[in-house]
Image (cartoon, rainbow, N blue to C red; front, side, top):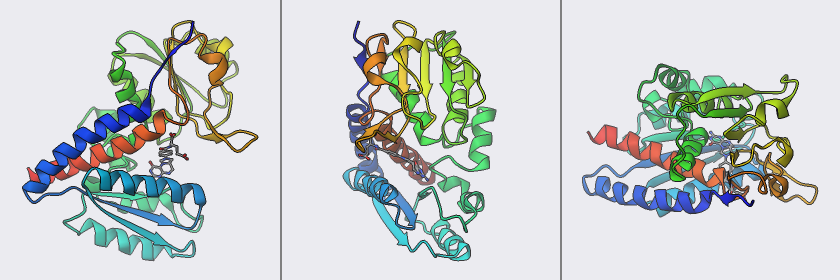
Length: 283
Ligand SMILES: Nc1nc(=O)c2c([nH]1)NC[C@@H]1CN(c3ccc(C(=O)N[C@@H](CCC(=O)O)C(=O)O)cc3)C=[N+]21
């Protein structure tokens, strides 16, 4: 058997086209959605991601602002920029690219962003809204994974989902979103003794560890849906996920590739959250 591919790149393009239509309607009413992206330091991978986000904004007809600062920027200066963007009526979403230089307290920076503009869904308030089942901004990566599952018509009720990884931005919110969709959820992590034991029972596997080949074909239940959130480099420097695609694709029913899977969906959901922020403000 060969799995069907969940094409995140194509799905992202489709969602972004719909977002562009909605953005144009808002712009006509004087509420063009606006996103501010702040990059501190010169990490080359971060620079690529940030450029992709700004490009996606432009394509969707959003107003976008990219602010780049030296790695030596003080925490106080960054907090002052956030305060200015919080007060800027043309800005509906603020994204501070992670990771930040070590001398800056990332938690403090995230909490400085107005909850109404926290389109990353990284703040404690946004996390609380997710736990409570209240409306609010969902973190873009797990939100994108849910859209991928929806796109293939996956019925999650009563299904066993295994999430590998427990980060605050992916693993934990992923588990909560799957729970909200009535899946039975298992969260595995670095202290889980026998990962394969859990993954073999999964109807849905979401791998979000950041280590190559953590999921191999022998761990996958035949027909399962395998979503790969990992971003790693192989020995030749090529982008690859957490799943050994070549062995898993022969067993899975559906599988998402890296690149071209979850990454582009993260960007689509960032635009979706920014659009929603602008819509809320427009009333
Ligand atoms: N405040 C904040 N919000 C984030 O959402 C955030 C962040 N910080 N820091 C870093 C991570 C990573 N991230 C990615 C988004 C898109 C791709 C993406 O589009 N990847 C393409 C490939 C891009 C390439 O060629 O390198 C793909 O998978 O097909 C990847 C990674 C967002 N992040």
